[in-house]
Image (cartoon, one colour):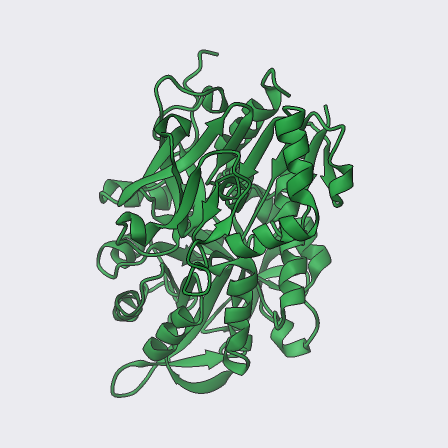
Length: 260
Length: 214
């Protein structure tokens, strides 16, 4: 049976990990490499690593750093931030990424999603959607790390990303980001109903119950979180134990059955 | 020991090489088909699209080289993900009106590669995440020390359908039984990514590399 994944999100800005609220007020939370090492030792299900300033500077993704980060990562690693073309994707995969996350470039050049999916497979493309609630209902998509209103409706955009070849959708509520008040469950549920690809809930997780709700009530295939792991005593292992207690299948650590 | 990892233009090579290094074995990246010889065993990675991977194998002269090594010299081979699917006779990914018969594979393990939905799976696609495997009885050497229910990382929408059920070493349940690993003689394949399956994945790689065949 397929397991529900608990995915720490690592936001990365100028050599360090950061975490903010509402995509703003960034706090430094430490260096990147030791964090990846620890998560890897603790056998998290997967990691998402996003360079939050790359879209601003217009620089190439930092292949060298990704290469360093990949040295100690033996679980799937999704890398995002500033990706605009196929060559960059190939270099990131060589550097140690297993999937890439596309956000801003998807609005500016939707064909990029299809190009990556055709060349490297749909499983390689995690389409990331950042949204704010719209007055009167629904959600609107923002690019540039929440900085630019694209005018697009989140549900329609999710459907389009799926049809263009995305393999997964990472849906983040900007307004709940960092507040630890719980995921936007109607948002996650609406996206999960709209598409047939897996949906990763993101933005707002403050405790394990929020994660259980995202899966059992909203239909998420995976839950991503950052603040809860940076700023509280809660851990990915604790999250999985809570999910398991709620009857949700999670991955157990490997135990050989050979006599020692 | 010399472990050759085939670099034919696709694949998360960085991850595969590092996982082998983690087992204290130095892998050799093989970037030209003529350099395929003189290795103790070979790993065929693969990510993405069957048609693209098969085309790159053909264009680089890898198909003849692999036949010579694997069929001629009995070199042990492990295919991973699309690398396992390429072991089949034919892949139906990308099959359509202009290509109804699909794309030929290496034909090392008889079978075809079909979309999970044509096999009756109606769950979300791709099949992505950690899923538990069920070993065939008796357990193959590739899964020594790895009990039923051990989770591995899968990410795919197409699956291997072996002509001979005896070639299937393990399955995973995703609405339908999904072939998780195959073997014919000294040719193995895993649909999951051992290089991204943490400790369980290391054990599979170690089992492959430490077999008497390597």
